[in-house]
Image 1 (cartoon, one colour):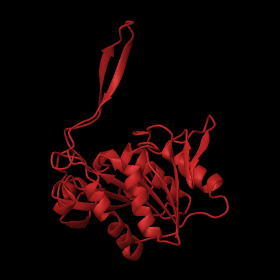
Image 2: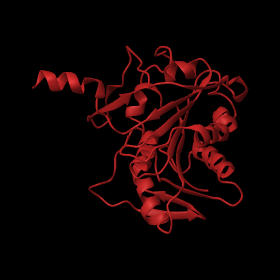
Image 3: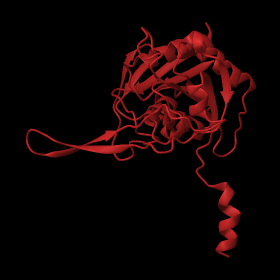
Length: 261
């Protein structure tokens, strides 16, 4: 198996090293793992691509590249430059430092990388490690992902729903904020929404008198109801959510069509 790996935390991120090991396990001794990751952190860029300026790419080692662009840029670089001799069988994006569950999905560069692969017709999985009091201080905060990542990916490859139509399915996997031994299993759920929390901005004035705004995050340990990714994670389960890039509100099409007829 040929696997392309990317992330949004950057080429030097610990989570990327975790994912490279997972990918090598999946690919096997005769497989290939190729890494094309952002040269610098790209958290929060979602599915952005560098449409108006070029992306510099540099080879750092065997099958290992850094690109000055977003995760989606890196997937495009991997598919159309680095692996021009043959596309990968699978794209893995992550392992992100922090969860990409709930509304975080909409902002995540990790998700953006997997989404771009799916739009290109390549099976893709995004992986993220939820952090909390039980695992953030571990020697390896990615312990749960490292221990359970390969088995989770194999389960999706063997039993997951994969299609080849427009806006094909890709998967969002979040590992719970617990040590590896505390993981209770895997649950399939929908994307949740943390009510009463949101991103915001905090103004600061620099020593030169200029005004700047810092984006502030929000509380993450907020349950989002039964059968949702955030709640499953907070209860100790690996969450698996099938996603599509199609943002259409299909449940409102007929109602709107009738209203505007």
